[in-house]
Image (cartoon, rainbow, N blue to C red):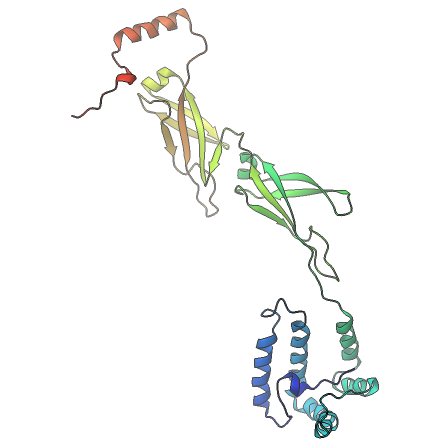
Length: 302
């Protein structure tokens, strides 16, 4: 076992230093070896623990006096003989640590040395398809995944209301197992929204089609439709053409900030598959009366 030179750990060459010098040295070393700054280093965490331990001993006048007696007898004398390292027997170190901290610190030191580096497990990714209604209102879905051991794992996944296309749901600790006591990885579930629905989601706006008859397009009409559980009154202006878009504000998808996108409705004029003789006569009469021909439209320059 190596005797710990607390002064050297703090970057000090001698024990002839003031408490202010110890504090400054501690701040410099703690900043340099903090685990948050050295995340890729395997030794920074242990070094950081030694730095804190050294400061705890040397900043307390009582424990520093006890330590200095040991330091003078083991470090100072050996330095005079030109030796760089001083090894103490297990019994001497045990007595030294027992004086300062009691038996618990000895057990803690052994545990630290025996502990291997913890490695977090890898994340696992999968995807799930839901309808736009399920995305808007939220739902619970069951999924099945094959675990590392080959067995099927069945999970209940809560889909939060207002989730968007390609957003991911994170299930903590359901990824691959960690090593040496490290945490398990996470399960990431990417959400895709079924595009077969009559509603389409682009950003926070909802898009849909509205089928109307030729006479509704010609004369105008007030039509009520239901969008995601809400009734919307749509006013079709007279002389509306197929392909025109009517916008209804704040009836789209949730934006996560208490507001909603818009609902955009594209008009589709639809004719019946079959017409009665009377309906045919009406259309024939309309053809005789009207001079309108969309193929010969002329720009009005007035």
